[in-house]
Image (cartoon, rainbow, N blue to C red; front, side):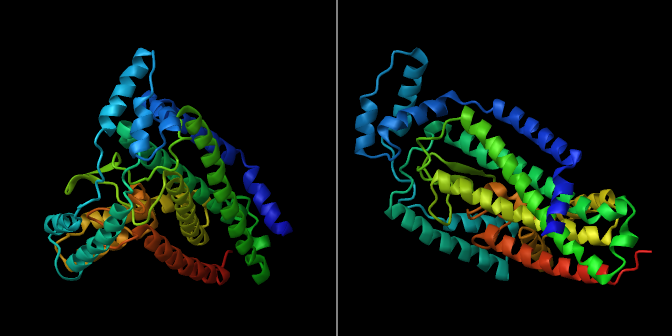
Length: 386
């Protein structure tokens, strides 16, 4: 425990650590300042009286609201127009066409075409259950929903995951390369027992990395939710009729999740999966750090490895079964999951053939990277550091 605390202290007392966090927070603050949305805040305020479920009670309460403010009068009229005559978008909604469009666009055959069809057969069952519960008949932010949803769950969280992954990877590499930087490798790693300190280094650096992610999230969302009000719509369904996706192949379509999420539960599910993704990047950095002794060179290798993994699926011809396999397996990698973060817990897009791809990908990545780390530990224990 003393070694763990010592390693942790080395990391959190680093000027680089706090400078990186400060830079990330400043960048996030700039994003948030430009996200102010008066109409969304108005909808949130009104829903305190009307509720968030689009039923008879909602319309009765909405009709009784009056305001003398000219801007609010405009917003009130807009809200009435947007919600008047709302119907459940999942009632009679057929998902089969999405799969067929993807299959035709990608030219899929055999196993991959079957997997794509099976995914949308499974999604149809989910849609039918949502229709039974009138799940889409919730307010969310009415006409401001798409902008707010995209900003919070795609833009802001996307940057948060990026910052968390880079900072966590850098901490892991600084920890594993600390002795190389200060030229104490020959002393610390001169015995087998000394080399086992790397286990403690991993625990300390992962703790620091995840702690930094939590700190960034707390401070970022404290500011965001201070400017953009969500308090009355948290229980709205994330699959509200006002939420949708812009799909280049299947067109504009509802935002359908495999499970029934409220805005609040979806928010925490995204943060939790983001923490798991950052853990995978920590594993990747740890393995690279044991192979490349210089921390800064190792960080460069870490970035190059992820860049190459993005480039390979693009360069390989998609007309062969091997090309399809590489493309679909890439989505299950840490960087593939990071690129698709805006579609987590949904059916994904043309590059996704498995239901719940984000959970599957996280499990596959964790297992594969655990094996990678074990091999690099064995390699390091036998390595001549002279």
